[in-house]
Image (cartoon, rainbow, N blue to C red; front, side, top):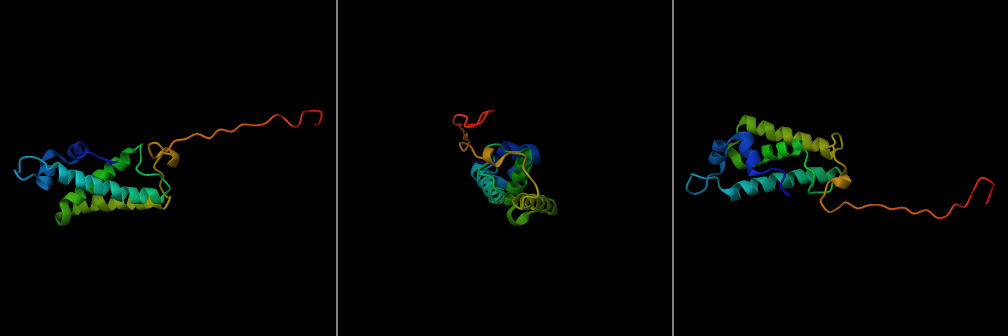
Length: 137
């Protein structure tokens, strides 16, 4: 499950930057496959850190901070070896945060039992009849 979308990237960084980074063969449109690949790479990188913290991945409830960092990581991936100092710093900040999550120093604000779709279950307990009462057996 991707933690951000092309629209998230456009909202944060602008259509022109995305076009510069991932233009299709015509140069007029964004190549969806390139963008989807960067988003998949970012989501996979996040899953590695988050699963180390005990969360079940992919997360079904995605905290906003994860979406923001997924955008930063995907952007860094799209820049490839042309990343600017700012893009690299944002990527490094994302990794630093994710390492803190993996070490348990930072919590995502969701229960690990809620983190994956379809993993929710319930525990039921049934008690037998009362063995003791106020007067003895």
